[in-house]
Length: 322
Image 1 (spheres, one colour):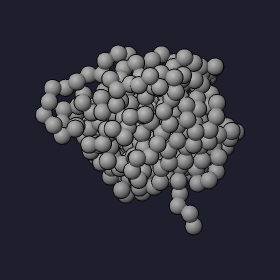
Image 2 (cartoon, helix red, strand yellow):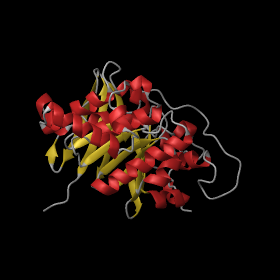
Image 3 (cartoon, one colour):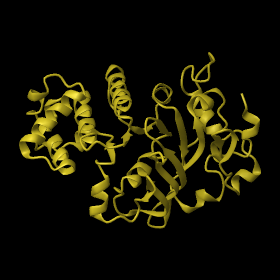
Image 4 (spheres, one colour):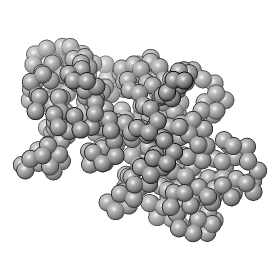
C-alpha cells in the first residue's frame, strides 16, 4: 500500500489577470513538518487557502494540481470539499478571534465540528468536545466549554482552534501562522502542543510562518517563498547551514545567530514588488539583490537541485556554498 501524501504541483493563483502565486510545488507525508517561509504578502497563506479550497473571489487557481493520496482536490464540488476539509485535512487559521464565532460558546463550536465529521448525537458531540479541549491541554475543559471566545486569552483561543481542527481526525494539518500575536512563552506552548499532537497522531504538518526560529525548532523541511514563487527548498538543516539563495541568506542575516556568527544584524534593502504582470519578466528579487546579473532582470531562474533534496532558484546559487 502506498504512503499517504499531500502533493501540490505547479500551483498558480491569480486575482483576475494578475498572478499572485506561480509554479508552487511541494509534498507532505504523515509525521513530517514542512515550513512555508517568507515575508508577509509573499503568498504563503493564499497557497494554504488554495490547498483547502477556500480562496475567496476574485482569487482563483489558474493552473496546477492539489492531490491527496492521489485524488485530485481542485475542481471538487462543495460537497466533495466538505468531505475532505476537517476529515482528511484540518486547518488552524491565523487569527483565532476571527476564526471563532463570538456568538457561540467554544464548546458548541468544537461540538459542531465533531458532528460535521463524525455523525455524533448532540450529547456525544458535547462530550467529545470536552475531551478535545482536554487533549489540547485546556485546564477545566468542562467549564471552558461554556465560555465565549472573548473571555479566553489568545493562547487559549488558539488551543480551541486547534481542537476544532483535529476534531475530524485528519491525517494532515495546515497551521497558518499559529503563533501570531502570542507572547514568547505562549508561542512555545502552542508549538509544543502541535509537536505533541503530531507525534501522537502521525500528522503531516504544513507550517506557515515568517519566524525562522519556529522553523528551526519545529520543521524537517522548508520552502522559502518570495513574491509568489518558491526560491529555495530543502532540508531545514541543510538550508540553515548553507543557504543557496540571496533572499534566504538575507532573511537569516536579519536573525541573531541564524548563520552561526556574531555580527551586526542586516536588513534587506528595497521593497517587495507589488503584484502585477511586470514582475514575472525576471527574478522578482533582482532589484533588492546585491548579486544580481543582467540576466536576472530578463529571465526567471528555475528551481535547480544542488544537493539531494536541496534546490534554489538563482543563477549564482553555485557560488553560495558555505
